[in-house]
Amino acid sequence: MSDGCSLPTRRAARTVTVVVIGAGHAGLAMSHHLAARGIDHVILERGEVANSWRHERWDSLRLLTPNWQCRLPGLAYNGPDPDGFMDAQALADHLGHYARVLAAPVHTHITVRSVQATEGGYRVSTDGGDWRCRAVVLASGACNRPVVPSLDAALPASLCRVTAFDYRHPAQLPPGGVLVVGASATGVQLAEEIHASGRPVTLAVGEHVRLPRRYRGRDIQWWLEASGLLDEGPEAVDDPERVRRLPSPQLVGSDDHRTLDLNALAAQGVERVGRLVGLNGTRLQFSGSLPAHVMAADLKLGRLLHSLDTWARESGMDSAVGPPERPEPTHLPAAPRLGIDLARGEFQSVVWATGFRPDYAWLHVPVFDRKGRLRHRGGVIEAPGLYVLGLPFLRRRGSSFIHGADDDARELGDHLAAWLARGQRHGALPRGLPTGVTA
Image (cartoon, rainbow, N blue to C red):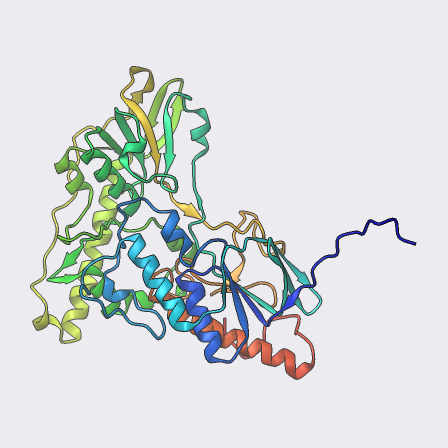
Protein backbone atom coordinates (compact mmCIF):
# COMPACT_ATOMS: atom_id res chain seq x y z
CA MET A 1 0.00 0.00 0.00
CA SER A 2 1.35 3.41 -0.95
CA ASP A 3 0.89 6.61 1.00
CA GLY A 4 1.07 8.58 -2.26
CA CYS A 5 4.63 9.80 -1.66
CA SER A 6 7.77 8.47 -3.26
CA LEU A 7 11.42 9.14 -2.62
CA PRO A 8 13.34 10.77 -5.47
CA THR A 9 15.46 8.30 -7.38
CA ARG A 10 19.05 9.09 -8.17
CA ARG A 11 19.70 9.28 -11.89
CA ALA A 12 21.89 6.41 -13.07
CA ALA A 13 25.43 7.48 -13.87
CA ARG A 14 26.36 7.60 -17.52
CA THR A 15 29.42 5.61 -18.57
CA VAL A 16 32.36 6.72 -20.69
CA THR A 17 36.00 5.71 -20.87
CA VAL A 18 37.55 9.14 -20.19
CA VAL A 19 36.20 12.35 -18.69
CA VAL A 20 38.12 15.51 -19.54
CA ILE A 21 37.41 18.42 -17.20
CA GLY A 22 37.74 21.79 -18.91
CA ALA A 23 37.12 22.93 -22.49
CA GLY A 24 40.01 25.32 -22.90
CA HIS A 25 42.89 24.78 -25.30
CA ALA A 26 44.38 21.93 -23.23
CA GLY A 27 41.12 20.00 -22.90
CA LEU A 28 40.37 20.38 -26.60
CA ALA A 29 43.89 19.26 -27.54
CA MET A 30 43.44 16.14 -25.43
CA SER A 31 40.08 15.52 -27.09
CA HIS A 32 41.80 15.60 -30.49
CA HIS A 33 44.34 12.97 -29.44
CA LEU A 34 41.81 10.76 -27.67
CA ALA A 35 39.55 10.81 -30.73
CA ALA A 36 42.50 9.93 -32.96
CA ARG A 37 43.02 6.80 -30.81
CA GLY A 38 39.33 5.90 -30.87
CA ILE A 39 38.96 6.44 -27.11
CA ASP A 40 35.44 7.52 -26.20
CA HIS A 41 35.33 10.55 -23.93
CA VAL A 42 33.41 13.64 -22.90
CA ILE A 43 34.56 17.14 -21.99
CA LEU A 44 32.78 18.75 -19.05
CA GLU A 45 32.89 22.56 -18.99
CA ARG A 46 31.45 24.74 -16.20
CA GLY A 47 30.64 27.55 -18.67
CA GLU A 48 31.23 27.92 -22.38
CA VAL A 49 34.13 26.68 -24.47
CA ALA A 50 37.12 28.88 -23.53
CA ASN A 51 35.07 30.21 -20.62
CA SER A 52 37.99 31.79 -18.75
CA TRP A 53 39.05 33.77 -21.80
CA ARG A 54 35.49 34.96 -22.35
CA HIS A 55 34.63 35.99 -18.82
CA GLU A 56 37.67 36.09 -16.52
CA ARG A 57 40.19 38.41 -18.16
CA TRP A 58 40.56 42.20 -18.21
CA ASP A 59 39.08 44.01 -21.18
CA SER A 60 42.30 45.09 -22.94
CA LEU A 61 44.20 41.82 -22.50
CA ARG A 62 46.05 40.43 -25.48
CA LEU A 63 48.07 37.25 -25.68
CA LEU A 64 51.80 37.35 -24.98
CA THR A 65 52.34 35.02 -27.95
CA PRO A 66 51.92 36.00 -31.61
CA ASN A 67 49.01 34.64 -33.61
CA TRP A 68 51.16 32.22 -35.63
CA GLN A 69 51.96 30.46 -32.36
CA CYS A 70 48.28 29.86 -31.54
CA ARG A 71 48.26 26.55 -33.34
CA LEU A 72 46.41 23.54 -32.07
CA PRO A 73 46.62 19.86 -33.10
CA GLY A 74 45.04 19.73 -36.53
CA LEU A 75 44.47 23.50 -36.77
CA ALA A 76 47.10 26.13 -37.57
CA TYR A 77 46.43 29.87 -37.54
CA ASN A 78 45.51 31.03 -41.05
CA GLY A 79 44.24 34.54 -40.39
CA PRO A 80 45.41 37.82 -41.92
CA ASP A 81 47.75 38.91 -39.09
CA PRO A 82 50.15 36.13 -38.11
CA ASP A 83 52.49 38.52 -36.28
CA GLY A 84 49.69 40.24 -34.34
CA PHE A 85 48.31 39.33 -30.94
CA MET A 86 44.78 38.08 -30.30
CA ASP A 87 42.69 39.65 -27.60
CA ALA A 88 40.85 37.38 -25.17
CA GLN A 89 37.60 37.35 -27.13
CA ALA A 90 39.36 36.56 -30.40
CA LEU A 91 41.13 33.63 -28.76
CA ALA A 92 37.84 32.41 -27.28
CA ASP A 93 36.30 32.52 -30.75
CA HIS A 94 39.34 30.71 -32.15
CA LEU A 95 38.92 27.92 -29.58
CA GLY A 96 35.19 27.77 -30.18
CA HIS A 97 35.86 27.29 -33.90
CA TYR A 98 38.36 24.56 -33.03
CA ALA A 99 35.80 22.73 -30.89
CA ARG A 100 33.36 22.77 -33.81
CA VAL A 101 36.01 21.55 -36.27
CA LEU A 102 36.78 18.66 -33.92
CA ALA A 103 33.11 17.98 -33.25
CA ALA A 104 34.40 17.71 -29.69
CA PRO A 105 31.99 16.02 -27.24
CA VAL A 106 31.72 19.09 -25.02
CA HIS A 107 28.99 19.35 -22.37
CA THR A 108 28.79 23.04 -21.45
CA HIS A 109 27.40 24.68 -18.32
CA ILE A 110 28.16 21.56 -16.29
CA THR A 111 29.80 22.14 -12.91
CA VAL A 112 31.90 19.31 -11.52
CA ARG A 113 31.15 18.85 -7.83
CA SER A 114 33.42 15.94 -7.04
CA VAL A 115 35.74 13.35 -8.51
CA GLN A 116 36.07 10.20 -6.41
CA ALA A 117 37.83 6.89 -6.95
CA THR A 118 35.53 3.90 -7.34
CA GLU A 119 35.99 0.25 -8.19
CA GLY A 120 37.39 0.20 -11.71
CA GLY A 121 37.86 3.95 -12.14
CA TYR A 122 36.21 7.18 -11.04
CA ARG A 123 32.83 8.72 -10.40
CA VAL A 124 32.52 12.33 -11.58
CA SER A 125 29.56 14.02 -9.93
CA THR A 126 28.15 17.16 -11.53
CA ASP A 127 25.10 19.38 -11.26
CA GLY A 128 23.89 17.67 -14.44
CA GLY A 129 24.25 14.09 -13.25
CA ASP A 130 27.09 11.65 -12.65
CA TRP A 131 29.58 9.94 -14.92
CA ARG A 132 31.47 6.71 -14.35
CA CYS A 133 34.76 6.48 -16.19
CA ARG A 134 38.06 4.66 -16.21
CA ALA A 135 40.26 7.76 -16.44
CA VAL A 136 40.02 11.51 -15.77
CA VAL A 137 42.06 14.29 -17.36
CA LEU A 138 42.22 17.55 -15.41
CA ALA A 139 42.39 20.36 -17.97
CA SER A 140 40.70 23.06 -15.93
CA GLY A 141 43.69 25.40 -16.08
CA ALA A 142 46.33 26.89 -13.83
CA CYS A 143 44.65 30.28 -13.26
CA ASN A 144 41.37 29.48 -11.50
CA ARG A 145 42.02 31.47 -8.32
CA PRO A 146 44.09 34.58 -7.59
CA VAL A 147 46.93 34.35 -5.10
CA VAL A 148 46.32 37.08 -2.51
CA PRO A 149 48.85 37.71 0.29
CA SER A 150 47.56 37.45 3.87
CA LEU A 151 48.48 41.12 4.26
CA ASP A 152 45.30 41.96 2.36
CA ALA A 153 43.19 41.29 5.46
CA ALA A 154 45.14 43.88 7.47
CA LEU A 155 44.69 46.73 4.99
CA PRO A 156 42.20 49.50 5.86
CA ALA A 157 38.64 48.76 4.78
CA SER A 158 38.55 52.15 3.05
CA LEU A 159 41.18 50.99 0.56
CA CYS A 160 39.80 49.50 -2.66
CA ARG A 161 41.40 46.10 -3.29
CA VAL A 162 41.13 44.28 -6.59
CA THR A 163 42.85 41.14 -7.85
CA ALA A 164 43.98 40.67 -11.43
CA PHE A 165 41.23 38.04 -11.62
CA ASP A 166 38.53 40.64 -10.87
CA TYR A 167 40.04 43.66 -12.63
CA ARG A 168 38.44 44.64 -15.95
CA HIS A 169 39.34 48.31 -16.59
CA PRO A 170 40.63 51.38 -14.70
CA ALA A 171 37.12 52.83 -14.24
CA GLN A 172 36.56 50.14 -11.58
CA LEU A 173 39.01 52.00 -9.36
CA PRO A 174 38.27 55.20 -7.46
CA PRO A 175 40.21 58.35 -8.36
CA GLY A 176 43.59 58.60 -6.70
CA GLY A 177 46.82 56.69 -6.40
CA VAL A 178 47.09 52.98 -7.10
CA LEU A 179 49.59 50.47 -5.76
CA VAL A 180 50.08 47.54 -8.15
CA VAL A 181 51.75 44.62 -6.38
CA GLY A 182 53.71 42.28 -8.64
CA ALA A 183 55.84 42.90 -11.72
CA SER A 184 55.01 39.92 -13.91
CA ALA A 185 53.42 40.39 -17.34
CA THR A 186 50.11 41.07 -15.61
CA GLY A 187 51.57 43.60 -13.18
CA VAL A 188 53.41 45.69 -15.75
CA GLN A 189 50.45 45.70 -18.15
CA LEU A 190 47.99 46.81 -15.47
CA ALA A 191 50.41 49.41 -14.15
CA GLU A 192 50.73 50.92 -17.64
CA GLU A 193 46.98 50.88 -18.32
CA ILE A 194 45.99 52.34 -14.96
CA HIS A 195 48.64 55.04 -15.18
CA ALA A 196 47.37 55.98 -18.65
CA SER A 197 43.93 56.56 -17.09
CA GLY A 198 45.35 59.48 -15.12
CA ARG A 199 45.87 57.72 -11.80
CA PRO A 200 49.33 57.87 -10.19
CA VAL A 201 50.74 54.33 -10.04
CA THR A 202 53.39 52.77 -7.84
CA LEU A 203 54.60 49.29 -8.78
CA ALA A 204 55.92 46.97 -6.06
CA VAL A 205 58.59 44.81 -7.70
CA GLY A 206 59.95 41.48 -6.53
CA GLU A 207 61.47 38.68 -8.57
CA HIS A 208 60.68 39.14 -12.24
CA VAL A 209 61.66 37.95 -15.71
CA ARG A 210 62.70 40.61 -18.21
CA LEU A 211 62.33 39.97 -21.95
CA PRO A 212 62.38 42.18 -25.04
CA ARG A 213 59.36 41.96 -27.33
CA ARG A 214 61.62 41.67 -30.37
CA TYR A 215 65.25 40.65 -30.68
CA ARG A 216 67.41 40.98 -33.78
CA GLY A 217 64.34 41.68 -35.92
CA ARG A 218 62.25 38.69 -34.75
CA ASP A 219 59.66 38.26 -32.01
CA ILE A 220 61.22 36.85 -28.85
CA GLN A 221 58.81 33.91 -29.03
CA TRP A 222 60.26 32.99 -32.42
CA TRP A 223 63.68 32.82 -30.82
CA LEU A 224 62.51 30.74 -27.85
CA GLU A 225 60.75 28.24 -30.08
CA ALA A 226 63.25 28.05 -32.96
CA SER A 227 66.21 27.60 -30.61
CA GLY A 228 64.49 24.68 -28.88
CA LEU A 229 64.32 26.38 -25.50
CA LEU A 230 60.56 25.83 -25.20
CA ASP A 231 61.09 22.09 -25.75
CA GLU A 232 63.43 21.72 -22.77
CA GLY A 233 62.04 19.36 -20.15
CA PRO A 234 62.27 19.49 -16.34
CA GLU A 235 65.37 17.33 -16.46
CA ALA A 236 67.23 20.23 -18.10
CA VAL A 237 67.03 22.44 -14.98
CA ASP A 238 68.29 22.03 -11.44
CA ASP A 239 65.03 22.96 -9.71
CA PRO A 240 61.91 22.40 -11.86
CA GLU A 241 59.56 23.41 -9.04
CA ARG A 242 61.21 26.80 -8.78
CA VAL A 243 60.99 27.32 -12.53
CA ARG A 244 57.27 26.47 -12.37
CA ARG A 245 56.77 29.21 -9.79
CA LEU A 246 58.55 31.93 -11.78
CA PRO A 247 56.38 34.91 -12.72
CA SER A 248 55.39 35.28 -16.36
CA PRO A 249 57.92 37.36 -18.33
CA GLN A 250 57.41 41.09 -18.72
CA LEU A 251 55.78 41.17 -22.15
CA VAL A 252 52.78 42.77 -23.80
CA GLY A 253 51.08 41.99 -27.09
CA SER A 254 50.57 45.27 -28.95
CA ASP A 255 50.26 46.56 -32.49
CA ASP A 256 53.60 48.36 -32.24
CA HIS A 257 55.41 45.30 -30.81
CA ARG A 258 56.87 47.43 -28.04
CA THR A 259 58.89 46.21 -25.08
CA LEU A 260 57.23 46.79 -21.72
CA ASP A 261 59.72 46.61 -18.87
CA LEU A 262 60.61 48.66 -15.81
CA ASN A 263 62.49 51.21 -17.92
CA ALA A 264 59.45 51.73 -20.17
CA LEU A 265 57.20 52.19 -17.13
CA ALA A 266 59.60 54.66 -15.54
CA ALA A 267 59.61 56.72 -18.75
CA GLN A 268 55.81 56.91 -18.48
CA GLY A 269 55.97 58.08 -14.86
CA VAL A 270 55.29 54.86 -12.92
CA GLU A 271 57.16 54.75 -9.62
CA ARG A 272 59.01 51.52 -8.82
CA VAL A 273 59.53 50.30 -5.25
CA GLY A 274 60.66 47.03 -3.74
CA ARG A 275 58.58 44.00 -2.86
CA LEU A 276 55.70 44.64 -0.44
CA VAL A 277 56.71 42.93 2.80
CA GLY A 278 54.48 44.21 5.58
CA LEU A 279 52.25 46.75 7.28
CA ASN A 280 53.32 48.51 10.48
CA GLY A 281 50.33 50.41 11.78
CA THR A 282 49.30 52.42 8.74
CA ARG A 283 52.71 52.28 7.07
CA LEU A 284 53.28 49.93 4.15
CA GLN A 285 56.80 48.52 4.13
CA PHE A 286 58.79 47.67 0.99
CA SER A 287 61.89 45.53 0.73
CA GLY A 288 65.25 47.12 0.08
CA SER A 289 66.10 44.32 -2.34
CA LEU A 290 64.81 46.08 -5.47
CA PRO A 291 68.33 46.68 -6.88
CA ALA A 292 69.18 43.01 -6.33
CA HIS A 293 66.02 41.80 -8.09
CA VAL A 294 66.66 44.15 -10.99
CA MET A 295 70.30 43.09 -11.27
CA ALA A 296 69.32 39.41 -11.27
CA ALA A 297 66.72 39.96 -14.01
CA ASP A 298 69.17 41.91 -16.15
CA LEU A 299 71.86 39.26 -15.68
CA LYS A 300 69.51 36.42 -16.66
CA LEU A 301 68.35 38.36 -19.72
CA GLY A 302 71.97 38.86 -20.79
CA ARG A 303 72.64 35.13 -20.44
CA LEU A 304 69.54 34.28 -22.46
CA LEU A 305 70.45 36.65 -25.30
CA HIS A 306 73.99 35.29 -25.34
CA SER A 307 72.64 31.73 -25.67
CA LEU A 308 70.33 32.82 -28.50
CA ASP A 309 73.25 34.47 -30.28
CA THR A 310 75.23 31.26 -29.92
CA TRP A 311 72.37 29.23 -31.35
CA ALA A 312 71.99 31.61 -34.30
CA ARG A 313 75.68 31.37 -35.09
CA GLU A 314 75.91 27.60 -34.75
CA SER A 315 72.68 26.92 -36.69
CA GLY A 316 73.61 29.18 -39.59
CA MET A 317 70.85 31.69 -38.82
CA ASP A 318 73.14 34.68 -38.26
CA SER A 319 72.68 35.96 -41.80
CA ALA A 320 68.87 35.67 -41.62
CA VAL A 321 68.44 37.92 -38.58
CA GLY A 322 69.72 41.30 -37.48
CA PRO A 323 72.95 41.91 -35.60
CA PRO A 324 73.28 41.10 -31.89
CA GLU A 325 71.98 43.79 -29.57
CA ARG A 326 71.69 44.41 -25.84
CA PRO A 327 68.99 46.42 -24.06
CA GLU A 328 69.79 49.20 -21.65
CA PRO A 329 70.27 48.00 -18.09
CA THR A 330 67.33 48.71 -15.82
CA HIS A 331 67.63 52.20 -14.35
CA LEU A 332 66.46 52.79 -10.80
CA PRO A 333 66.23 55.85 -8.59
CA ALA A 334 69.15 56.22 -6.20
CA ALA A 335 66.94 55.56 -3.17
CA PRO A 336 63.60 53.80 -3.85
CA ARG A 337 61.07 54.43 -1.12
CA LEU A 338 60.98 51.81 1.63
CA GLY A 339 57.62 52.80 3.07
CA ILE A 340 54.43 54.75 2.51
CA ASP A 341 51.97 55.89 5.17
CA LEU A 342 48.44 54.97 4.10
CA ALA A 343 47.05 57.57 6.50
CA ARG A 344 48.29 60.29 4.15
CA GLY A 345 45.76 59.19 1.51
CA GLU A 346 48.30 58.71 -1.28
CA PHE A 347 46.76 55.39 -2.30
CA GLN A 348 43.08 54.75 -2.85
CA SER A 349 43.48 51.30 -4.44
CA VAL A 350 45.64 48.19 -4.33
CA VAL A 351 45.74 45.82 -7.30
CA TRP A 352 47.07 42.37 -6.47
CA ALA A 353 48.97 41.09 -9.51
CA THR A 354 50.53 38.36 -7.39
CA GLY A 355 49.74 35.33 -9.49
CA PHE A 356 47.15 32.60 -9.82
CA ARG A 357 46.70 29.02 -8.77
CA PRO A 358 44.63 26.06 -9.95
CA ASP A 359 41.54 25.04 -8.03
CA TYR A 360 40.98 21.32 -7.44
CA ALA A 361 38.60 21.59 -4.48
CA TRP A 362 36.34 19.06 -6.19
CA LEU A 363 39.08 16.42 -6.55
CA HIS A 364 38.51 14.04 -3.62
CA VAL A 365 41.47 11.76 -4.27
CA PRO A 366 44.59 11.77 -2.01
CA VAL A 367 47.03 13.12 -4.59
CA PHE A 368 48.11 16.41 -2.97
CA ASP A 369 51.31 17.28 -1.13
CA ARG A 370 51.40 19.19 2.16
CA LYS A 371 51.25 22.49 0.27
CA GLY A 372 48.14 21.44 -1.60
CA ARG A 373 49.89 20.85 -4.93
CA LEU A 374 49.15 17.90 -7.17
CA ARG A 375 51.69 15.11 -6.98
CA HIS A 376 52.40 14.16 -10.56
CA ARG A 377 55.24 13.25 -12.88
CA GLY A 378 54.98 15.04 -16.19
CA GLY A 379 51.19 15.18 -15.94
CA VAL A 380 50.75 11.59 -14.74
CA ILE A 381 49.16 12.00 -11.31
CA GLU A 382 49.98 9.63 -8.47
CA ALA A 383 46.69 7.75 -8.81
CA PRO A 384 45.83 5.24 -11.54
CA GLY A 385 44.05 6.86 -14.48
CA LEU A 386 44.42 10.48 -13.37
CA TYR A 387 46.19 13.03 -15.62
CA VAL A 388 46.66 16.79 -15.66
CA LEU A 389 47.30 19.18 -18.55
CA GLY A 390 47.96 22.89 -18.97
CA LEU A 391 50.22 23.57 -15.98
CA PRO A 392 53.48 25.55 -16.30
CA PHE A 393 56.53 23.47 -17.23
CA LEU A 394 54.49 20.26 -17.07
CA ARG A 395 56.57 18.29 -19.55
CA ARG A 396 58.51 21.11 -21.22
CA ARG A 397 58.97 24.87 -20.91
CA GLY A 398 56.23 25.47 -23.49
CA SER A 399 53.61 23.34 -21.70
CA SER A 400 51.43 26.28 -20.67
CA PHE A 401 51.48 27.85 -24.14
CA ILE A 402 48.56 27.23 -26.48
CA HIS A 403 50.75 25.41 -28.99
CA GLY A 404 52.48 23.52 -26.17
CA ALA A 405 49.32 21.57 -25.36
CA ASP A 406 49.75 19.51 -28.54
CA ASP A 407 52.90 17.63 -27.56
CA ASP A 408 51.80 17.22 -23.94
CA ALA A 409 48.36 15.92 -24.89
CA ARG A 410 49.82 13.52 -27.45
CA GLU A 411 52.34 12.07 -24.99
CA LEU A 412 49.86 11.82 -22.14
CA GLY A 413 47.36 10.33 -24.58
CA ASP A 414 49.93 7.65 -25.41
CA HIS A 415 50.38 6.95 -21.71
CA LEU A 416 46.64 6.84 -21.09
CA ALA A 417 45.99 4.54 -24.06
CA ALA A 418 48.72 2.12 -22.93
CA TRP A 419 47.33 2.14 -19.40
CA LEU A 420 43.82 1.37 -20.64
CA ALA A 421 45.12 -1.42 -22.87
CA ARG A 422 47.00 -2.96 -19.99
CA GLY A 423 43.84 -2.97 -17.91
CA GLN A 424 41.88 -4.64 -20.71
CA ARG A 425 44.48 -7.37 -21.12
CA HIS A 426 44.28 -8.18 -17.44
CA GLY A 427 40.51 -7.91 -17.30
CA ALA A 428 40.57 -5.06 -14.77
CA LEU A 429 42.26 -1.75 -14.19
CA PRO A 430 45.81 -2.07 -12.83
CA ARG A 431 46.48 -0.46 -9.50
CA GLY A 432 49.65 1.31 -10.60
CA LEU A 433 51.27 2.92 -13.60
CA PRO A 434 52.04 0.66 -16.57
CA THR A 435 55.57 -0.61 -16.72
CA GLY A 436 57.64 0.30 -19.73
CA VAL A 437 55.73 3.57 -20.31
CA THR A 438 57.53 6.69 -19.20
CA ALA A 439 55.72 9.51 -17.50
